[in-house]
Length: 313
Image (cartoon, rainbow, N blue to C red):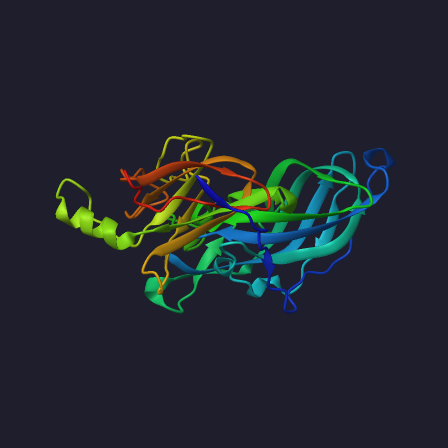
């Protein structure tokens, strides 16, 4: 394994988009001691078949373990295309807001469905409606403990995985697309990234010359799985277990003629990555061919460099 040590760049495209708001009810005195400062941003693990996914967030709510909800109104976020927030980019939801210190057990994002929509690459500027069940009432829910320390600023990022979250419903539906949200919350001090390159031309040529191998259907994507030597599998949102953590489409580097990728906001630990150039329907079981499978360790605030795919035997 090769590793180049560098700080993880977490870009914020502020430009007037930083959210503002005020906190709601104070928590019980038993919930915390003093206050801390929090910032929450949002990022997206890349999608492949959509050109625009705009989800209009209107409010963020935080639930202290022993207190009442703390709420912040978000302004201007209805214009942000989540697909612009990939490869380590993030957009601030709230910045340096004071909240009761202590353990929090849940986060919710309230959605304005009237201003949320999807666009497809194949249909240009046509907008498709997006249904978000309970999005305007109880919101998108992310449960799990996170800590806000007293007299300290803590920065979090919400990883909104569009590829896993957007499904195309069949038959009678509330909208053209449905949202089945897949969210991860990470502390920015605890994350690193994986970067690498893929020789797509070589892989395509090899597959075309061997009729026993499936032909490449597009440039492909790198699949990221939690754990060392994890079993590779396609993405199927209907499976409760075994799904990849994220899919990262590769992008052409004109100077090298190789395709590059970056899987960002990964918590410190071991991961398995693998590449496939076959289409993956996120609602069906697909028999994909994987190659370049390798295990890597992610260290906080570092970028782990993967071996070139295909691997040299």
